[in-house]
Amino acid sequence: MAATSAGKTYHHGDLRNALICAAVDLAGEGGPERVVLREAARRVGVSPTAAYRHFDGRGELLRTVRTHARRELAASMERAAAREPGADDPVLAAERRVTALCRAYVGFAVEHPGLYRAAFCVPRPASACEPGPARPPAEPEIRAYTLLREALEALTALGTARPGARPATGAAAWSAVHGLSLLLVDGPLRRLSAQGRRVAVEATLAMVVSGAGSD
Amino acid sequence: MAATSAGKTYHHGDLRNALICAAVDLAGEGGPERVVLREAARRVGVSPTAAYRHFDGRGELLRTVRTHARRELAASMERAAAREPGADDPVLAAERRVTALCRAYVGFAVEHPGLYRAAFCVPRPASACEPGPARPPAEPEIRAYTLLREALEALTALGTARPGARPATGAAAWSAVHGLSLLLVDGPLRRLSAQGRRVAVEATLAMVVSGAGSD
DNA sequence: GCCCGAAGTTAACCGCATGAACATTCCAGG
DNA sequence: CCTGGAATGTTCATGCGGTTAACTTCGGGC
Image (tube, rainbow over the protein chains, first blue to last red):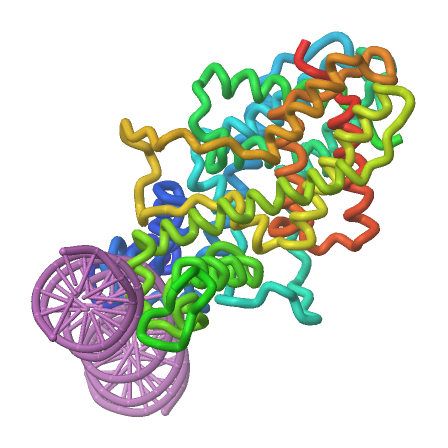
């Protein structure tokens, strides 16, 4: 009855995980809105309500998928940064790290649109727009953002190659890559050619790396 | 039977518009996912299926709302730009126009989160992620973007105040304000204090105005 | 006046989220 | 080895939302 010893009997043995996988697949195929409890259950070969033994409802399933997607995004960024060749000049190295991270961020979004959208979705309980006094536990941290922010701080501390220009703030940079990703993946820039896309990415990178901080 | 002469009889007289208004209200209250055919009909006091006489389905209703929202966004930006005092220095004036537009953009998003989200939603037919050869008629143009782009082009043509720095590309700038808006309205930056929000906005503005173009 | 088509209506089907009550297994004690 | 309860699944049932089909009213043109 260990997690992996699933038989084909009444008890699945690892339903929770199986459901998560199915849900992640769904998200990959069609984004968060495609993550449907019933469908996930169907794929796993179990009745819809079985899921409730492991999740509070669709909301929690989606939140789990989101966590997964965020992890993948961050991992993808780290891999890319690690692949980046070092440089003698520390400033250049720092700049490269930033651009590598950003490129990977947008790259992930473009390659896995569904997952990317799932990574930043908001499971809405149905209604509720103006939040009451509720204070959900302040999300756990988003690695992708942390990576970006730290890389930028490092770069800022070193100064830039070009005098007078300063790298963007973490939040500003995140805004840029996030916005670009969504515009490309889901938004009006969706149908840009690969070429056009590349141009937009480069322009955004330039803005982020040598854009001004707030002064 | 002119558009506005609605009685309380069998025929509504101006259902289409009434539905649009209701739908826009809904979007304002809870974003695109809140735009529900049945609810709109309910609010107008008509049977759900009546809507099908005027819209192809929920998708078209949503698209109509989106158009409306985009118009409002653009209008809000233009109003803000118009309010901006002129300046003797044309460069300064151009910079001011850009920042005014951006501020208004983000401001609109923050003040009308639901509408803003609706303005950039994608009515999904249920499934379909990888586009076939389909080529929807290439959306009509998004004024908010055009305004931003043109203001930036003007600024670029003039050169910036600070030497060496160049304003961002239209796409990059749009990415920045769009991303920031979503992060603030719907995303992980959602629960920033008004203060924190302001800081993020200023940082982003600085990045956009004096960030580097692609070189 | 009559007839047609536009604009509404009701009834019905399907999928989805969810809750309640019932069924099966597994496993800890005895 | 046997047994009872906790886990884990299952079946029913409710309610909501999208959408279709078939029927009903009304407003006008002839």
